[in-house]
Image (cartoon, rainbow, N blue to C red; front, side, top):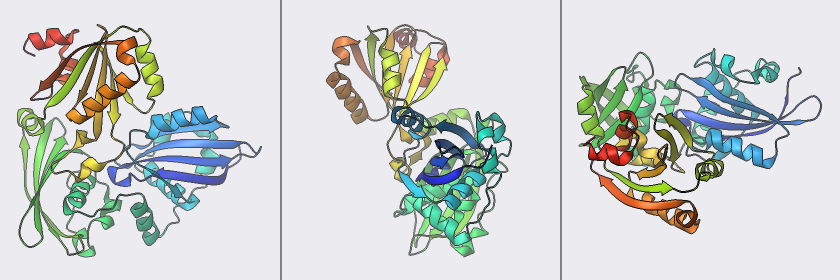
Length: 369
């Protein structure tokens, strides 16, 4: 197999989320166009998604791209071949065993083996800026920085820190962990306090950090003030948010199948009681919110139970109304669904139901959870 010839590529502007979706177009030695779709993870997983598709139809390509990148909440930006090679190799070096699990990767190996890291530091910084949102507000910058710091994504630090502060941001943990909540408190003279809740091994840690921002918004000082382990009960209290749900009965045996075909970008999880689909927001605006929540990028959850119930859940009531209006406009209530009720809870309930083993949602509620 001969190396492929590069035609063009594009990447999602989600580098500061720690993941990037890439679509690259090549030509093989026979003159056939080959399209590749990647999911690149820069927090330890490496190249954790790869599709190699010769001469794909528009429908096939769109379904694959949406399935791989639709949940990232980004917009595609054009990238050059050196930039493409940098992103692939930077992800690969996170876990050099990642290619072993990639189907069809052997078709790409001759091209992959010729790739080199040729970008200068200034070119890397320019690429990261192009693949990142504008960090105009202090809370936005601090939330992203804390996320990258917890994830040990050090190559992004020049986007946040002045040269004098780079040495202050020593590794927060020995391996990558996940920031699940961050709250920013403004103080005097450009000072801010961040309280980060981290999913840490079998427990949680609360890390309190003091930061000073310069006039141009860059972080010029960062200090760890305190860190403590907290219980899962305390963490749950920190993360508690109300849920808004509708429950309907499914009258059409093919409704779920049509739902999955229409929404290839949704992430699917299988539970004993049924199947959960997660719809993400179209962008990552939740990172600018204070407090920031990891699950703030979720637009809605759809659970199809084996008992024939459809539970639609969101943390924002306006999202639930938008979904209800969409189902009404598509005639779902007239043809496939029978609306039962609407429910609001003061704390997360859906995931508790999924972990309970109870098959019927109303039985779960009546048993006091």
